[in-house]
Length: 138
Image 1 (cartoon, one colour):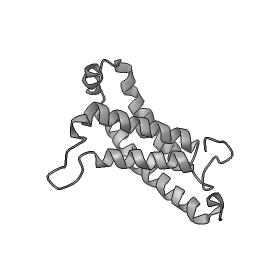
Image 2 (cartoon, one colour):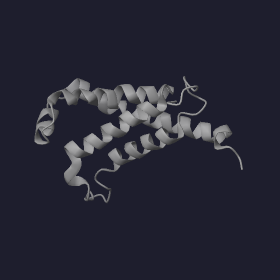
Image 3 (cartoon, helix red, strand yellow):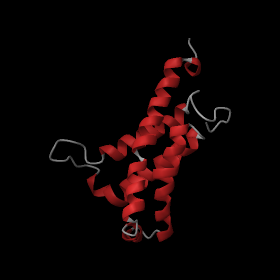
Image 4 (spheres, one colour):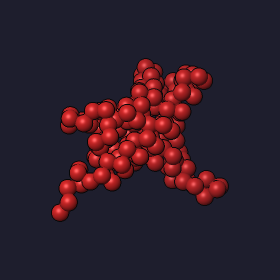
């Protein structure tokens, strides 16, 4: 049986997935930097969570995706993205979990796609085309 961790296709696939999440997700975080995140206070208060948690959006939507993009501590960064997407659905989209948009799309498909992509990266790691490859969190 071929070892998947020595397979060139595996490393290219991990790189492609890291690029997809690492390039696209920061746009959401940068938009929040520009527009502000004070609107998150009300969502957090609705679940009796402290307001300072809102700053985690910058870790989950800017820092962690950039870390994924370059392949630094890929598994840790992927966990941050997963948690960020979970919180996004919990706070802002929980009423849409079982809904379909008029276009036929699943209402939380983008959040779910980022979540599942990051979850995949958590399990497979960043591959050999990464900045760091020697740690168990890579």
